Length: 430
Image (cartoon, rainbow, N blue to C red; front, side, top):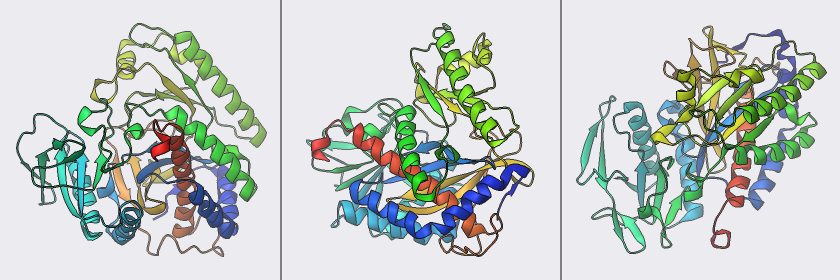
């Protein structure tokens, strides 16, 4: 299933696909050398946007919550990647404690937890779930729409170890992005592996730090395949000291928007792109598509109405927004049954394990698709995605398209490894 491109300006991305296919040996060697120097995040997902004239990541999630949206045919890949990741960290691992998000009423998210549990059980681990919610004082049995059941238990801390009442894991997997802060119960676990590390959570992490690392990675990679780094990289800038409720920082935000749009206009002129550029303003920390708005002019961020100011002021778990990132808007030129869509690629360790299209019939190509009303369509190619067909015409072959997605997503994963290294509060222990 290959979404069709709706613009006639698709030639640059088709050329990019051809360059990537031709350079496949050099690309895989480049990644191999990067992973000799850097440790990939345990798992992550990357939202991509294909504009026809560029293909770029717009978000990288280090606590992916949509494993249930992957095609069942991809599960063996995920199991193999899980085995490789665990063997690298703790070869003798027997017990894995998974700590999910607190929102246990979100059945879609619970199906994700069930899929993760299945993957790691098939990888040879005893898997149990522990809750950070202090209200969970006894085992909770949660029914799933698919007919299964999850059992979530209260966490038990004993000195430097964290587990359950009768369960002592050597490895703890967070599927909770710590938007509400770092709970003390997770700190100081020097005798156990905590994955991802605490500084990967939104209590510490910033999107601007990630995209600064990604810009560096994109420049290095662009030299390998001989393209303009802009073809892979969205311009951005960070803007702090913002208070949307009290309208503090409006002028500096407007200046930031103006600066990003000016750089994009210059590139559009260089490549003969006749679309009007836009920018995305979003919280520098946080996820779930909250705290995001599309702007086409610097004046769009002045005199916001109350509804928009409220939307931009607070993100998940009531976290107040005081810092934003202004990112070049990458319009989506991809459609599934005429609905705007974007690819989301899932990875574990250094491996692509699948993906899906986020589809939103009520959103435009310049809007955030991670919003109520979206649905997901698995990448269900008839052939293995990693067996490319360089002889096929660009844009006509599913595995070729997905390989290109996988390459750009892995660039974001390399950037995440740089980011985590540079923000590690205890690098000597890494």
